[in-house]
Image 1 (cartoon, rainbow, N blue to C red):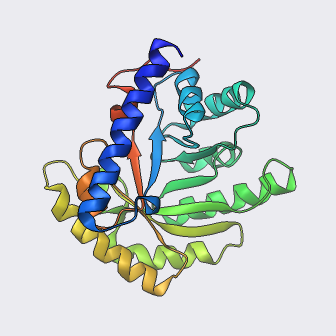
Image 2 (cartoon, rainbow, N blue to C red):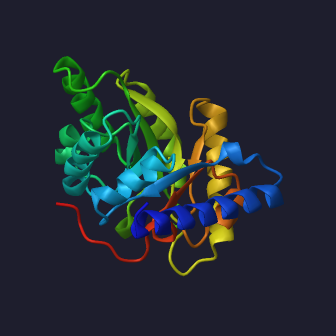
Image 3 (cartoon, rainbow, N blue to C red):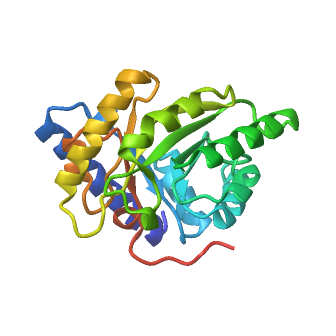
Length: 242
């Protein structure tokens, strides 16, 4: 094992211990919290090291970096069953590219983006570039700030309704980031309420993706089923993959 691989292994063990402790405090089963490793700006070799350690859910926030990295990882680990997730803001004109590699898009925040993804999935299936529907999470705006992206909490049901009308999209839940300058616990409490209301109306929306390196404990306390961790796994700086 290289020094870098050993460093990642140690970081992963620490993150998993944090998740286990948070789940124990909240009275939850750790199996109900998925670890999503955010590999943005880090080389494909780091992604391969995570795969070797059993992490198969990987995330990127820029399509330009994600596509080549997903292809490179498939070459390095051809037998690995990796699921790539798009977690960053997505422009509609990137939809066709994203559906070639993404198993799930966690940042659907508008009806126009949902429509673009649905059309892209249909075209990709017809072209033999993917096998089935795309899982999507609705990106929620906890504070309603349009500059940060996300759908206002009160508009989530209408957006969910639009998503489920497409056979090429599969609604899985909601995602959000705690707004800067707010207490994460307060933000996640609001988000958990919105998630519960959405789930009552749309039973397939079972995922609540919230919590990152600095606030995953608070997110788990409020029911997060997916924590998106980058810095705590790979460090604060990385080199973009070629």
